Picture 1 (cartoon, one colour):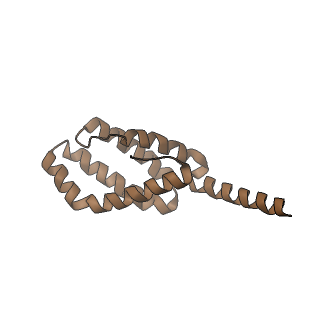
Picture 2 (cartoon, helix red, strand yellow; picture 1 turned 90 degrees about the vertical axis):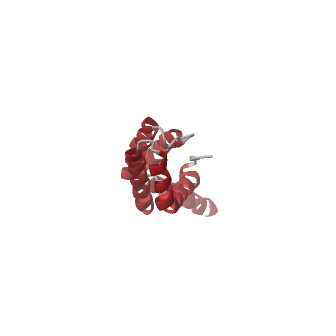
Picture 3 (cartoon, one colour; picture 1 turned 60 degrees about the vertical axis):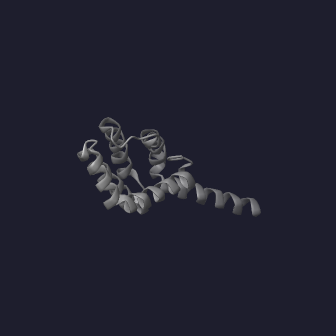
Length: 122
């Protein structure tokens, strides 16, 4: 009886993890995003574009509880791209959106590590 209960618990947890990761594609794509943001220089338009591309993919397959966080990341990336490396515009963006992007990034990174076993950032 204990073996059946243990197996049921493992299956329930596995299904929950797969659901949270949209069948695994979200978790797989998170690794690409982690690489795109690794050592990201927000002044580098090409690097910001790579990050934006990965974030767009992830926002579509993200678990429902992270959809708003991904929207914040995408909005921030769009604004950073529009700044085109201009230090004063980037400083203003950090001042205006810094707290929002930090909270969203923290939520995404926590879920990535806890559910998908992917580390985003250092």
